[in-house]
Image 1 (cartoon, rainbow, N blue to C red):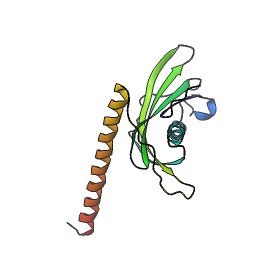
Image 2: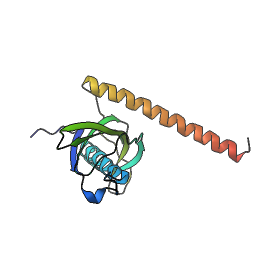
Image 3: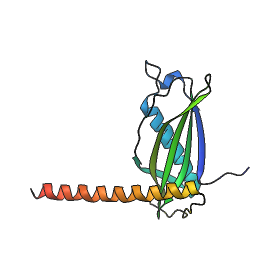
Image 4: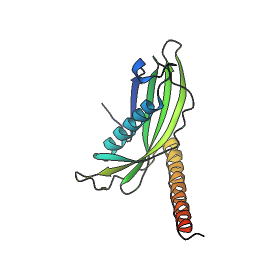
Length: 164
């Protein structure tokens, strides 16, 4: 069996205990599945325990219903020194109608840690396909935007502290 270390697929059947009274899956269940897929992908890639640092752009595009299959496609998009961006795409399938739809995508930043919980280096990721290169470039852009937003928040806090 040939497993690709930087990608992972996970499928879950939606059961009634995951849904609200309208038969739609609670967002918290989907977030849990997203985090599990991102954790599994990052942990396997790094060969270590990982922790979730952040989640970007979680948008629930369409409801997910009881009885549907939810497939999560996770992939390493970018690596820093100790962190990895994991993109997760969610495709939901109505089994009876045999119709699949893209219901969610988001991006997790995961950090590899040692037994004491300290960040440790991860193997560098080199994109090999056009899709991987596109996702890698987009991940670099998201990282730059996060860093810019952090600087802006720090400037706002500084200005507020000094009544500027």
